[in-house]
Image 1 (cartoon, rainbow, N blue to C red):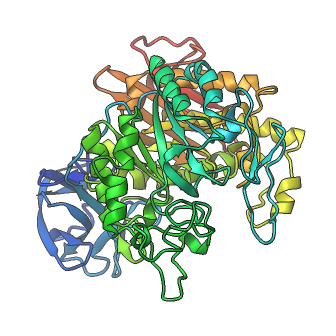
Image 2 (cartoon, one colour):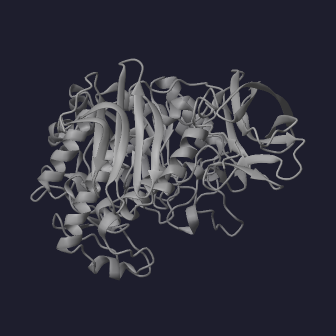
Image 3 (cartoon, rainbow, N blue to C red):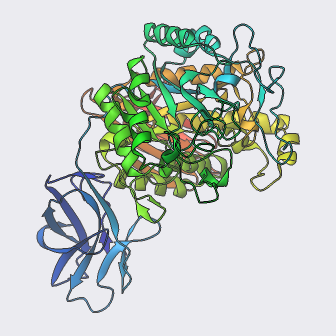
Length: 619
């Protein structure tokens, strides 16, 4: 017997799904089985510091199906809150909270509350961000046009060879290059457009020693191995002709120790923060008396920027600062690297600078956890309160999709999606950067079908390749994962090469060269077809509702009142076939096959079904 019913991701139970805007009134409806018969019900709300507690007596409303409805209306100021329900006149389990499966449950004590986020919108979310497909490129590994000349002690490699991974004198130097450049990207813009790419996210392009460029030497200069500022301007112009916007990787938490700002090894002469205590860059960094310094994760080559430095704030966020300057040059925003490490005193200024230069600029944060309640260095962050990030990289959904597609764990995916629906504001949820892999993670093909080598050495990872059987299975599973990635709320971000079945374990093996001579054309065609779906309003701004999440089957519904469109997406990773109840006539978007009331999903089957008016079935 189900004693209580409450699901805040359903408008029937919570009139505004997800985070709620400040001072906007919303309603809560709790259902209690009539056999419980409490004398009264109270909704208990407390803030994140547990210093404010409010109690809302709930009034009893119309009943039905053996349940009584208890309702409350409330409005709150900006902040992070938690809530549960208390029943009076009940002798035993008198508290109602959320359990580990995200279901409403009875508690005797130690009740687990639901999260309630309240935001106050300061900046408008870019209207373009969730349109089409985003594509991520590591410049050195995507495509080369012309000849690239190595600088310093860097090593040029043959395109397609495995990246270096062994240490040299105790250090992985990341000094092997394959020649990819900005001209190479320009040459492949028509290819990107064929995937319906409308946003191009570039890993760092500024002057730096390494191939990944996260050790910035000069934020004002394009790395010469990638090209010139003229090449960059041409890329902006040619991309614009195809309706493609470009966002850059903002590495504003640390610099390279060889940078002109820090200059540890005197690459830029005698000055720099490390060598000169009177340097204008000295207070950018936190030095001890012995001249040791704070680093990012103790990497001595990556001294951490002191966010409280007024000089650093002016350099990055001033009128002519780095944030605004590259937006002036035609980019449309920043993906902020390790945003968890950037203190609010700097982050707020970065966001304000970008929005001041272009209100439609996008700020996307690298957050690996739930961004609505993230705690970093003992401090609760407020990324999604309306004054900071437009979006975040959706690592929780990535992990949920992989758990489901690889292992058939539909329940895990359900819980991830429940938390996103419940905790995030709608304007963030519809603009989430949905990834299956990045430059920091194992390639999606390898992740789904390869041996699990998370704790293995890099020597083992370097030697382990997919067997023919694993490859074939992997391609099939990638197609399924991509179906989910392209049809969820938010927008899909494709990591270069995933669309043609590039394999590899985590860094640096996930950073191989795009296989232009031998792409998987069948998988590529699938990505192109999925890209076409991103033109449909129902997938960019439509409502979302989970339908099934059990026995290896996951299904959800997308609806758009604007276009009167209803779509059901379903995947079966269970062992047996599954009859999915539709309740009407639906047509497969890709095959045109019609289903009347029921769709039978075989093992590894997937469908994207659009509701049609006709009632006849063509099965």
